[in-house]
Image (cartoon, rainbow, N blue to C red; front, side, top):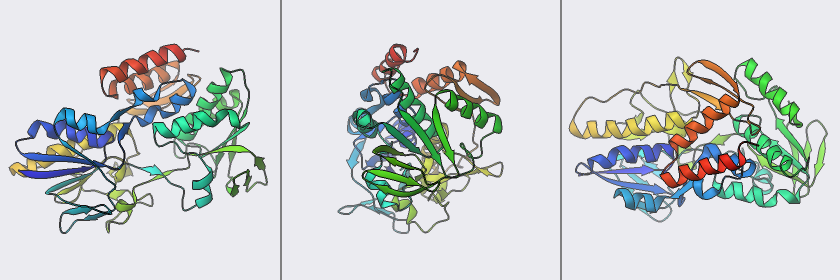
Length: 373
C-alpha cells in the first residue's frame, strides 16, 4: 500500500482527499496541516459585514479526517526533500510515496515587520473575528491593497457601520495606478463608482512610508492617527514552498507540468502552483483549486496502477467581485454580470461549495437575515 501525504487542508487538499478516500485499498492517506480548521476563505469578509457566524465558515480537520477514515496530523512542515521522499517539521519527519502540496497561500507582508506587527490580516475566521472585535475602537480604516480582497473588506466595513448609522472613514490604499490590476476597464469603473457611492476613498499610486502603533504616514504626505490598518496587499506561498529549488513566481508559486507535478511523485495544486493556460498564468481561484486537487488524486491512482495520466485542462467558470451593498460585478461563462444578480451568483456558488448541511443552512440563514438590507 502506497503512502500519500497531503500538505494543507484547504479547498485543494479536501478535494484530493474526497477522491483518494475511495481507493483506501491502494493508498494510506495522511493530511498534515499547521491549523486545526478548514476555513471558507471566500466569505470571511461576510463575518464583518453580513454577520455570518464564523462557525458556519469552518470545520475541524481532525473531525473531518476521522469521519472519512484517514489520518490527520497537526504539524507545520518546514522542508520537503524531493530526492529522498521525506517531508519534515521542526521535530518530525514523514516519508511518502506520493506527495500533494496543497498548502495554499498566506498574507504577504513583503518583509515589512511593522506592517506584520501593527496591521490586521484576513486569512482565517479568527482573523475576521479579531477585526470585528476591534471595530468600535477606531474611527478611520485603511485597507492596504485594491484587489478583490481589499474591495470586499472595504465594502463590508461600510455595511457594518451603515447598519449602525455610523459613517466612519474608510480608505483603500493601492500602490498601482488603478485598483483591480489587469481586470477589464468596465469592471474597474463600475467598482470605482460603487466605492464612491459608498463614500469609500481610493488612493492610487500611494505607498506606506511609516507604520507605527499610533499612526500611519503615506507617500503622498497624508497621515492618519489611530487608524485600523488592514493588510490585503497580496499573498505568498508557505516558506517551505519558497525554499524548493524549482521554478516559481515571485509569490513562490511553483511551476508544474501538464499533470500538475514538479517531480514524478510530487503534485502541487491550488494557490501553491502556477499553471499557464492560453499563454497566461491562471489566477488564484477556488474553482481551480478544487479541480486540481481532484485531478492530482486521480493521477496518483493512475500512477499506482501504471495507467496513463490525465493532463490538466482548466475550465474557467468565471469570477465575481462581491461588494457588500449587493452591487457586485463579474464575468460568468464569458458573460458580464453586475448588480444583484452577480451577488446572487456569488453566494450560490459559496453555498454549493461549502461543506455539510449545517454550514450551508447557517450561511443561508445568515444571508437571509442580514443580506437583504
